[in-house]
Length: 119
Image 1 (cartoon, helix red, strand yellow):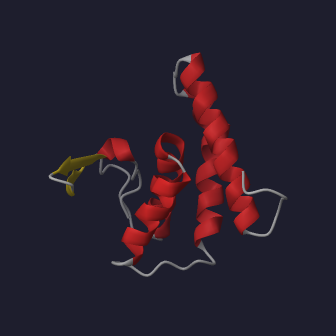
Image 2 (image 1 turned 180 degrees about the vertical axis):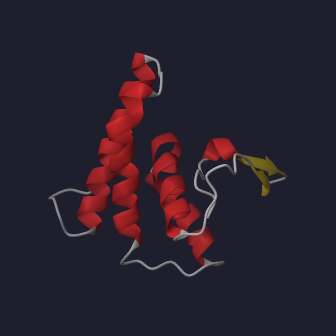
């Protein structure tokens, strides 16, 4: 797994991924972690429809366990909420990221059958 798979670490050329950057966190692990990381960031910058399209495109190439993915989505929504105050973001960007992570967290909880809304 890449370990830090988000839009800022992807270079595109002619509509295709040309390179992945920032491999210092690469390791052996569950590839759904990378998928969940990208889904969380895509939700923040592009919304739920972009997440659905990306996930569908990935599913054409790799098996995605729909029972495990929401757990990784929950992790990728919750962990940043604990640490993002130390990222040095401007207050408005911090508020935007915090709100998006909270909404993504609610969607993951809903997918797991916990909570009342998919936000």
